[in-house]
Length: 233
Ligand code: ADP
Ligand code: MG
Image 1 (cartoon, rainbow, N blue to C red):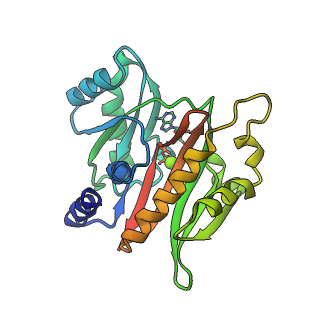
Image 2: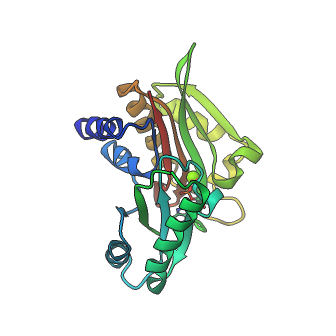
């Protein structure tokens, strides 16, 4: 909780009320699993980070900027970057961000471990503060489908274990979580725990007015928060 407080305070010092993947540590501090990742601000550091995270393997690279909320919309996410292309990809991502908005604050580039989406389901876990009900925790189908299908469900925080379980059962895509078409079912317990930890985080910090983990990748082995954005007041 102290760690989380420090992360939010340092964002406030940067004079921004929007945070992106630089807030991954906040999730870590609340025990929500995230893929291994580093934020770097130099080409050579990107290469070094990739060597550490995935020796000889591929990584994901993302632009980190409070001015760019939807990173893939501007070509700010590169998935499956092989070791030889990390340096050039670093330059590409920064160039794209600059072209999109010349005065954007660019904190750097996140180099992240690849998550196996094929064995998982991209879900969304989030929170919005409602003037009447207070913090509403949201769960649903995530990734690129979130706006198209609007398959989500809400609960007022704090969310108990049983109501978190109900949320998983309520969405139309529930059969996907249980392993449709011969796939292995996802680890529902990990998703339930994530919803409860998220509920705890936003209850502890009323300054967080909005938070989205999208995607929260649910696999047979657990749940991982791959992307996050939040607004503080
Ligand atoms: P944004 O939502 O800002 O466009 P994301 O970080 O959510 O950026 O990345 C966009 C998409 O790229 C994700 O929905 C996911 O499909 C894919 N992706 C992102 N990070 C990873 C990762 N570490 N491993 C595999 N796929 C990823
Ligand atoms: Mg996202």
